[in-house]
Each structure stands twice: as C-alpha cells, then as structure tokens.
Amino acid sequence: MVARISCPGKTATQSGLAKADTWLLEFTPASAPEIEPLMGWISSSDTRAQIKLRFATCEEAVAYARSQGLAYRIETSRNTARHTQAYADNFRSGRHGQWTH
Image 1 (tube, helix red, strand yellow):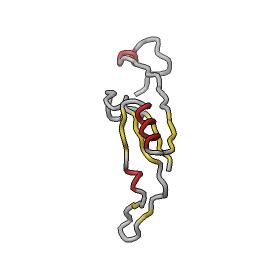
Image 2 (tube, rainbow, N blue to C red):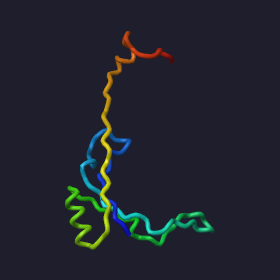
Image 3 (cartoon, rainbow, N blue to C red):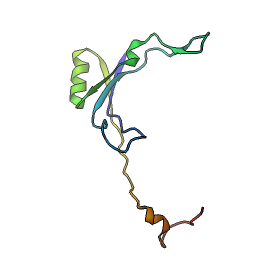
Image 4 (tube, rainbow, N blue to C red):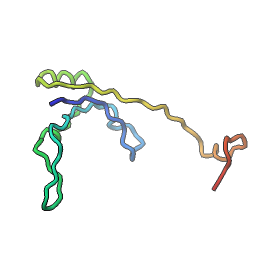
C-alpha cells in the first residue's frame, strides 16, 4: 500500500488559507469499495483509507513514512495565479466584449 503525501489547497467554500500550509499523508485504497446489496450502502474492507495524518512540513511526513516503513509518493500542488478584478471593471468603457444582461 502506497501513502500519498500532498499539500492540499484551500476548500472551495473558504476564502482564507487556514489549512493550506499543512501536509497530508493518506493511503491509496487497496481495494475497490463494494455496494451492499440490501441497502445499497458502500463498504470496504480497507480501513487504512480512512486515515489522514497532518504534518507541518513535507519533511516531517516523509520522516514518518520512512520510520513506519511505508512506500510513499509526494504530490506537489499547482499554485494558480489569481487575477483580481474590481467590480467597477465590469462597467468600464474599454472593456473587451459586449455587456449583456
């Protein structure tokens, strides 16, 4: 089982960066989830898929994975450039494209 070490981005519902600087170690699923036939619930025999460990730095996460003898994979996140725009720019005279309602 391979552990995935990544730095998750901020949630879509939040504008702040509260948990964006922590590193997350989680395990890849060892088996596919199964659908229980009576109720239709999804179940799995893989309990490691529920574990998510948070670390302050990537080096701490890698050190933990090595101390536990885990195979790991580091995934870096893509930082997107933000284009900030004022609301008044929607109504400026030199705007590209037509204004439509």
